[in-house]
Image (cartoon, rainbow, N blue to C red):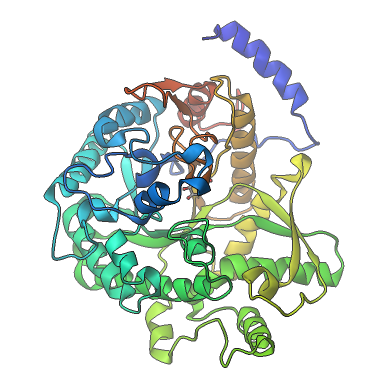
Length: 487
Ligand code: NOJ
């Protein structure tokens, strides 16, 4: 470990090196009601993949059957072993001083084959214990029902492509509301729908259904119906007693136009509609964005499809889906820039061709530029919802405990969200991804997002604080991103 003096010098040097532009870190305190948290997800941390009655899920199956698609052939079989070490996780969260912990429930741990007629009481007990320990330490659980780990049995029936999916999900949600709901104020039904559906458009991501340009749209259609079904179950059966709020966690990069030419401005908006509007428009207005409907229909026809690859909601479905978001959850890690592109050739269908925009990730000097803009976009397009950042953080390949790069990233991101708050935007919380290093999907354990380092070579999965732990702890304690805040 380093001495605190050494750390100060190191930090000071780094401040100079990382002073990438004239941007000044926000020097005002976060308000007292602003909440700070950390996040994880079941498959990425729990392990215990076949323990105590847990059923197989699509990531168990995928990592076991297609190891070639995962870096180093890693699996989540043991992961951070949080199935056994959750108490230690809560101790770390308590040390950090977070107000909330975002974690997900593993569907197949609670319902081994996905259906609600067979409940695994040991699975229920695991989450009850975790929630009780959090509450005992004054940490609010913020719970995701689905973070990509579909029970394999349901996948064998077609998964998200089965038109009964909404019913299966609503039944699962009901079991969770019944068992855990009295302690939960914030639910997230689906984490990052775009990526939850990625595996219906490629062989290289679970469940590996290779139907690009068709499979993802169908998946999303049923996902949105499932979200609405769970939302209504909650309103009809639980809201009065439990009074929680539900939303979807979106994955979005604020997309800025590459130049101020009209066509680039339009391109950036189109990118926002194809990534965020695809999910949020139905929740707020009952239907997909017009630009998506017209572009997918236009290209589908030229490709020889008899109907648009983007499915259509009935009027009843629109009414059922509209208004099913109580707050707005955002996972964001970057900024992108969009430029107009010439119409992609007609050939194999893909969402990228449907959108028809040149998109690039921002370079280091501009990677935070889209974050305040994103908050503004959401506010303007979705009637000023209460926004919480449900994920933000930095993945590094290094094992070093001196993660100043991560501190720099989180500080700059939080500062942009605080700037949004100062402009009157209703951002009420921030959650960093992740509490600890974990299984980063197809990247295995090579990409580390944790504030805590995990020794994946030790059977104990030892947790060790990185420098970012003290930094974030101090921010939470002082509610200030700098040594001192103005007000
Ligand atoms: C998105 C996902 O929700 C999470 O599972 C993933 O590990 C992080 N962001 C980092 O990529």
